[in-house]
Image (cartoon, rainbow, N blue to C red; front, side, top):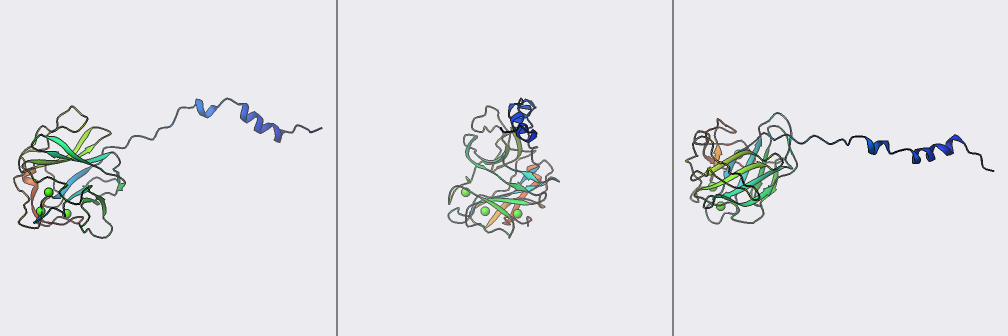
Length: 212
Ligand SMILES: [Ca+2]
Ligand SMILES: [Ca+2]
Ligand SMILES: [Ca+2]
């Protein structure tokens, strides 16, 4: 006859025991904080066909940000409604740049890129049109730019609230298809809360500090 030993009993007792772990409160990871990001540079118009569009984003916070809840939303100024959304992803270290770009845009080694969905004409040329960085989890507008005019009552798909894409006075500088330049925060990353003060014309520097 087989002897019942403690070694045999332990697995049986464990199986019969109430599921203590199931009764314990479920540990949820805390929701991600709203990242500290700025739209830092935009090239929405190029000579010829617009195949080199990009949007440069900088993590201006002190912590690494996780971007899975952040969307780059493009807004049509004719209707003040969203016409394109590009979901961001992955981490972005403090001070680092992310470039959302069409395929031909070159960035420095080590700079992350996220592809725009189309080969050309992803970003409308005004006027006006707008770009928003939006935290979809907290429903917070992180940063925005309205160019070639002021969009002050934008709506995003699936939301009833209206958002102003202007901080202070709208930027008066515009991109164009005559010169290979961009719109950028100048000096690099400057954010005083007034778009007219902060945004100017630049040489295009996707993934690198802005150069007037
Ligand atoms: Ca364009
Ligand atoms: Ca341009
Ligand atoms: Ca740049």
